[in-house]
Image (cartoon, rainbow, N blue to C red):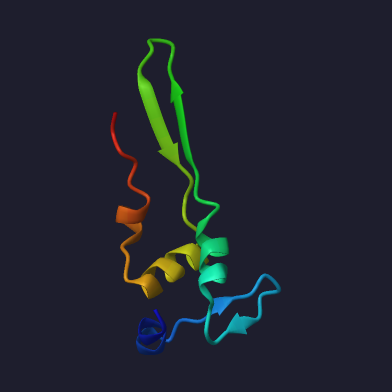
Length: 78
């Protein structure tokens, strides 16, 4: 993660919006954890799933982890 941070020049913000030069695992979890998947059924009983959109900071955190945001938020079928 820190290698990617140096290579990409991305610094993640603390909750007070100050940039942090070396984010901790705890901070990454705080940034990524709010992603939600909402599941429900329509009037015909068909299952529908929807996910919350990722913020810019969440997408940057995933970049630092070397993870594609599309893959991270992919909603599995079934």
